[in-house]
Amino acid sequence: MWKLLPQIMYMVAGQDDDVDGGYGFEFLNLASVCIQNFIAKDPKTLMVTGEGQTITYLELLFKFIQRILVVNSNGLHKLDGIIAMKVVMALMENLPGQIDHALPQFIGVLLAELQYALNPDSKTPINYTLMVIQALSTSLFNNCPLAL
Image 1 (tube, one colour):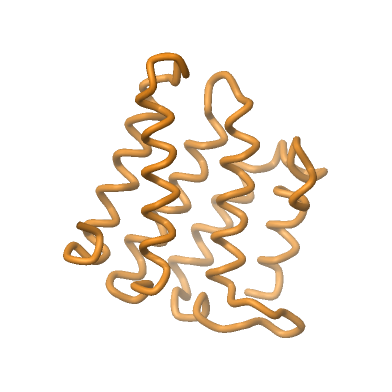
Image 2 (cartoon, one colour):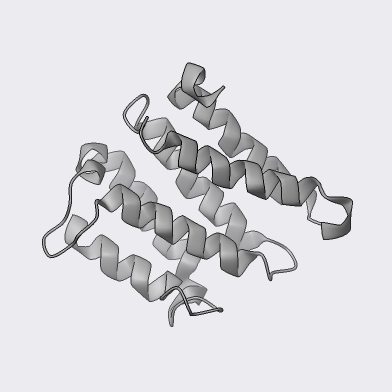
């Protein structure tokens, strides 16, 4: 099951130089549901390195979320960012206290998104701002002392 995750993420997010995401970016919503199900069904596998990979599935997922947020920064309605926040929340809810080593990175990305969203010049929709706040709130559920 986990062997499909890197292919799904590559299809949707593409490589670092793809400004519009991968060739399947329009299927981001469907792919995120699959990713959230992967996380919910077997969260422990996120910590391992897959066959033929050099990084863990969690690190791969972090890069995926960053790519989606980069593409989202050009969007008017920030709907892609909302989908990325749902994946972050799935991570935080299904791995309480287990991703302490990566939590500061996730919180850093979320705080950067919140800072951008609260900037009056950005004209960020309120629903995206609320999703970022909700994702930050789930980091408190994951590990409150470390998140604070």
